[in-house]
Length: 83
Length: 155
Image (cartoon, rainbow over all chains, first blue to last red; front, top):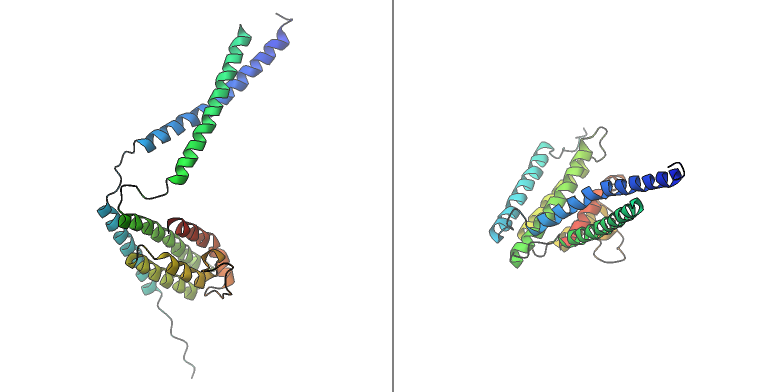
């Protein structure tokens, strides 16, 4: 047993290295498979034409309201009147 | 016996690594091509889909300008922020009115605002004096770049 000690140490290192690699890689592989599966079988159906067109209108209304609110809160200052 | 087991483990690990790399490349490629509108949409709805993305990225630019104006000391003057907000308002109205042909108008406005070379109507960019101050353009450069990348992607 004593004669085989260096070989055993080398083998143990290899086992540790392989285990580490598998431990690091495997969760990523699983996550990627889940991602691909989710892409192939999406939970939500694709949006319809009406939904997309209405969505653009809603987004525009909302953001224009933000613009108007900011402009109302920051009116143009009149230039200072010099006597 | 043990050596053979380790060799087999190594083979399995190498296979897993190769598989992982291939899976990553596949996901990356599908992500690159997945930016487009759903294929089930009509041409008008596809244009609206892209226009919505453009409005959202212009919102990011506008919000960055407002935030830069709110910090103390302000990185953007109130007058410059007003210029950005008014430009944003005009751009959004253009996108809503012409969902299929808004891109040149919006890019021209952005070029007038910032003189960013990617927004230039011609290459090389014509001489330009930005409506915003150079230091203000510098602060907003990442957001301008982001907006232009998305606009060029969806146009």
